[in-house]
Image (cartoon, rainbow, N blue to C red):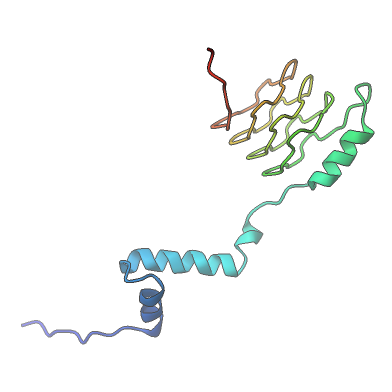
Length: 147
């Protein structure tokens, strides 16, 4: 004959139940774990872009077609670089994951071996761009249907 265990709930489980509105324990524990990670340095696990938008803009303003800006190997993840003119800039080996290039001029730019996954490329001009070995998975694009 098995003896029934007394129902014991720790303070933590009670707090989880209150915060999560009675979610199943496994789900609510995951929610709390993610919350704790965020509060103690989740951001330290994420990489930050090498430059801020202002620095990129300044480098592009100073550059010319004869001497294009060199951003090779840079990390521009999640930067909003919309409407910027890259004037044939060198972006080879750059990490452009989630970067917003809406309306940007990337004509004649060197984008070889870049990661453009989840980049926003609405109205971006890639004419003449070098895209050898570039990876573009699940970009945000907009195509106007032909009438």
